[in-house]
Image (cartoon, rainbow, N blue to C red; front, side, top):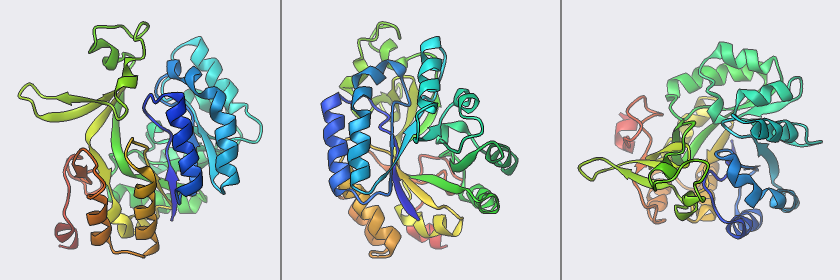
Length: 303
């Protein structure tokens, strides 16, 4: 299996992004890095001028670079952004909205996790139109992933599953992040930049519940499938995705790489991951066909 790093979902300052990717290029044992703004088109001008230099540095370090499209395309400007990205010469594109399928028709491309590929028929339809790789939605249980993995092998395409980071649960036309601060989407003043890992959302009785990232709703817990890597391999998963957060992603990548290579056992890897100061509980419920926020312990897996 290969290890990948998804696009940054949060609104980080340009300098922070540059420093992050410089360290990823020099130190992180990942095979593929996804670049680009996926959540909010208003954020793109802050860092899109750095994408070329960032991609070049990652490629010099031996990383494969894939450019990701917006997950929501609603305006003429966003359609133009998507069209221009899909027209990039020699670039590999990850599609996160069906709008991009129109512009990339007939050309090889990847399907992102927000394209909602849930069954073999959908996978075959999209593969026939140029899809070479699919990153499956986070809520799919392992049994469904195994079925799709078998179908993907017959079609000759790669299968990717998120193994670390907050789960994307929904996207909306409205920006809750702005609304929570008494602002509108059009006059948000980029308030989301104040929350580098998303804004915590609590229930009325003060319990941690979800996380808000602009128009995106994320889980409060961090997915961790580090103990489930053997099962992912058996299910036909070819690529394991880490979602960037403000924690030490180099350390996270090194742990997953070691676990994937068999250098450390699943239990030891999970214990080491818990020592990295992740500010939320871990979860793997979706993979086990249970509520997503749950963490199925190793003993229960073995049983």
